[in-house]
Image 1 (cartoon, rainbow, N blue to C red):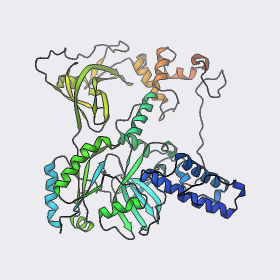
Image 2 (cartoon, rainbow, N blue to C red):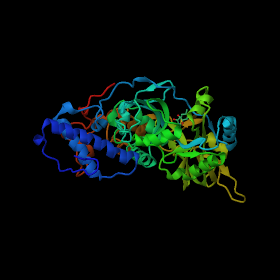
Image 3 (cartoon, protein in one colour):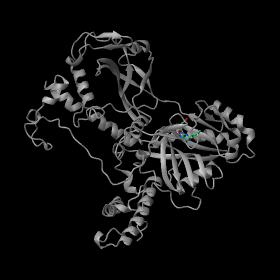
Length: 529
Ligand code: IVH
């Protein structure tokens, strides 16, 4: 029964297995699923097809369903199905989760290096260079090789227990790979990230459903990972990279580089870009090469981290306030680009607030094609003297939507007239008013833009969670005058909006459409906490 190397998925009937055979098969499948997970998520080098993996996973599930006494909390099938909770429990970290001093200039990195140069006895392998992941910082703890818990950074001393959500992330092993140096207790720091591809797809879906897109992958990941209902975390495109030791009991690694070699042997994902360096020249080269690689990584990084390799030197250097003296983050400049502004448009939000958006000639800013930028309000447009047709510098500070930083003067080019805020709401025609920096439309629900916004807001998942009532549907309902206030939603009848061939759920013809939906959590695994 070797499901690891040459899995045969022609399984015998469940009934034909003795209890002992079932037990053995469950054990073999558990190891195989964990192993293939590791190859897929950590090594990026799967050895079996998705179909074979699914067959192994499903067989294990069948066996566990047939004999629930064989279930265990570290079963890979327990990645899904934990019931929701009311709040996240607090967790004290195994040791303090410090933050990093961050600098932008090469000079400041040079100073850092000078300050600590006299501690080293040799030139060789002084530092380890790593990408600075732009994600969510977490503590992940393994005891006797099994995942015990994971927690957000919180205030550095204690965070929130997000174990159940973490368990839905494929790159988190429930058990470490068998290895002779397996520590009895291992607390690590990792970064949860949402790869760019998944982020873009998710945002596209959100917009289609009438929801605000997330500004950046970090925000998207952060909202997901602190969910109270783990079923909302599963199937989300999250992964994690391990990068630092917090606490260990057992044979400690010799130095940080040694740890980074051991982590993947235990089944934990580390960056392929980590690099051991000896001189400041190499530090600079690494920073430059990562700046160039940045847009091709498939996830966001906002700089590099330079860390002392030798643990004894780290200990000697100690910490200052809340950050260690043995590491520094060398951040990247924001991504900038120059393009032409084709128009300034007025947008009316749900609350009547009017924002200005710059339409741009599409331009690639660090791997994202940008055609709109925020201008906020009329004061900003006036101060920066930005007009339609101007050449502008835009800057992305990690968010997908950039800012217009400034206009670039062009000699001899005739400019258009300065932007003038309309006196009336472009949607409903009500006279607009100004309060502090922003203009507002006083139309309330009589303004279609605000009514549409109110419907979308009311139907959103965090509110009434009405599926299929996104911006398209809300727009159509308002457009056709079918909904004039929220109450009208409950008067809608199937016949009013019936489209030919539309497959409606089982609702009787004369009932209203909005019926409460009750969902039951999938049971099966015993979840702690
Ligand atoms: S080491 C005390 N390494 O950047 C040093 N941090 O404050 C421990 N970060 O919240 C952190 N990539 O979570 C380290 N390769 C990396 C990192 C990294 C991202 C995060 C970290 C922390 C923030 C800086």
